[in-house]
Image (cartoon, rainbow, N blue to C red; front, side, top):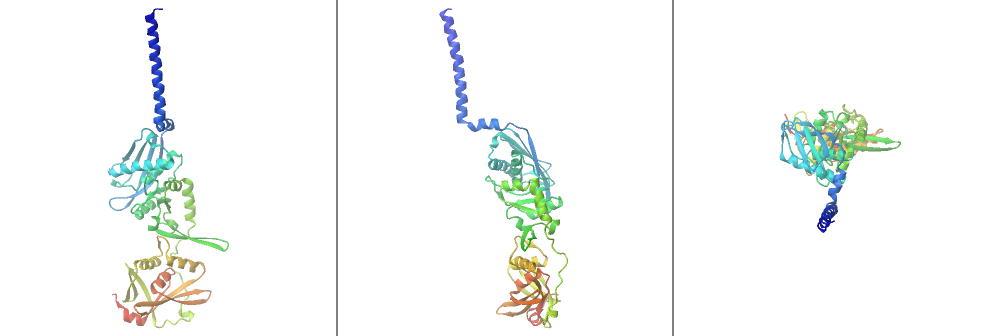
Length: 401
């Protein structure tokens, strides 16, 4: 073989070896410098997935409407898309959708750059914007990543931050009305926002031990929509599961409905209480003003907004937000068989009205000196008659006709 041919062969071999060395070094450097990328390529292999959930909203007329939110997850390069049907979508909606996907990735420990996520929304609202659907978006992504099924009977509202915390939203009462109209079984709301809705009392006893709890529910009794509060995405994902929704439904079916008819009481006059100088009165609440009214004469009084709101809650049999002191006192009295059978407003001393609360248990009658606003608030929860001293009515009353 000629020296020239030998040199050519050596050169060719050296070239091939050099290419192999460069290729190997490229793989080594790529693995060290970008380990997450290699991990993504292996991790994202899988089938396309979809998941849906109901999301209540409010239209431009201030009415509650229901939106069907569907998410699709597939291998990709980190794109997030939002599609809506014949409505105007604000710029913020796309931003919140991206934040939701990022939050879902943080909550599940998933690198979302290896996935494409698209959201589609079907609704009768004219405009869709804001972040009140972002928590639901994140929950859908989490459900698909963790292969969890979402109940079709659940609806959810709430915003989400990057740490997976569920943030408050507006008009929860209107959204709850939309959930009720859509026959939703459970509405998931941010922690603390179930308190803007009516609370329903539940009493359960085991032997001699009883517990009384209050739960948020729209429009009272078991005919409304059960409300479940959540603080994090993990709590929300658990709450919208089929098992959780069924459990919440069973719990609310055991609630004690509010009595529609007024309670009947023993008459104070029959128990020896002299009411000859008193007249039966009605209570009217307007803002923080209370009016004790007898025919066309009313005694006006100003109290705090909290007291006035509590009196109104007693009159209309509603517990709004968490139970207050009057709700708690009434629950204790009722559970131990103590009936509040009357309230008397007696006089006016040193700038304050004076009054009494009458309680009856097993034939024993108790008259308790009480601030009239407290006595009326508690008595209203028992449909107790209100009596006002005629002399006080004459001195402090004004024409109300």
